[in-house]
Image 1 (tube, rainbow, N blue to C red):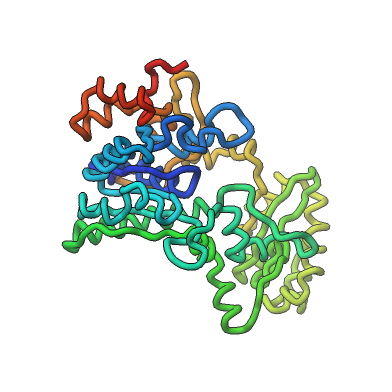
Image 2 (cartoon, helix red, strand yellow):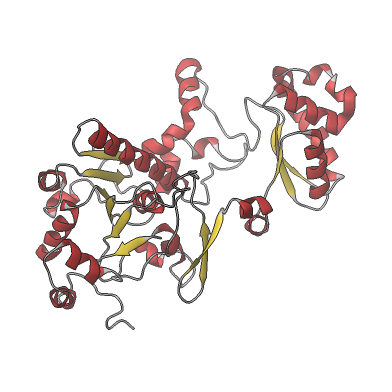
Length: 404
């Protein structure tokens, strides 16, 4: 099997911060792209100070495999070096407000003139156009504005936001595949470079595809229904005897029948109320009560064993401790332990898995300015001493030289 990664030879400049943009570049870097991380010389990407812990834990996994080259894009020298880096790049990822790079003389028109093959991925909360385009955009806001939060949570509770960077992650996946489509067209269809306009709002809105069609055709607006579904019953989370939780889904008729047989025997399978999906949905509260009573009499492990024995769909509601001990996650390398020099940093693995050209993680997110001298001297005609002088002038930062 080949050990080469599929994006060997691809150069990406990542001029984004926090999650959505940097995650896009991370995905490309996982599969072999050479990613140059451009961040502010003084404080770097804001993700370096994100979270309730002193270490740069979020930064370390989101910016793995990247090279840190800080540049002050307000300064003319910083803009000049940035243009030289992008002139030799295949992809640029940025997430400034629309018009910001243009104000710094490094916008699309300028950069595409320098590099007609450039694919520029522009990630913003609301897109490059439209009445919201100049608003500050964060995942939390678009999770609300997209309709996601409105339909998530308990019926008698508030709209519920996810506890993770869900919108940013969904947006990053869209950006990465859009970049690859643009590169494919450029390289195989005699095309040129182009820019990708990624709106985090639209990426998250796309998750609600069924809701869009159903509202447009039937006026159905999906309000909060907890863990139940308007399409599937049984479908919920259930507490077990040992105060753990499991989730089940009876979306397929054969699976629903197996669940009914497990919790109530043939009498429940033959109960007229539950023989069709329409009937199960109509009597969902009665069905859930039966299942809840059955679950409360058994531990989670007992429940899992019984459902597996009968080929019924069930999953434990895992906490992170469960996942770290789970053999399946381990066998699939879903968690990697990456050497940081001082200690190993656990982080999510590389996926999807390619049979011939798998991805890899070579190192966690770099120290700020760790690669400044090497990258700038490689991509420009500046000498190491000139780069260090630029660092003294505040245009860049050279990591490891004079740092505390």
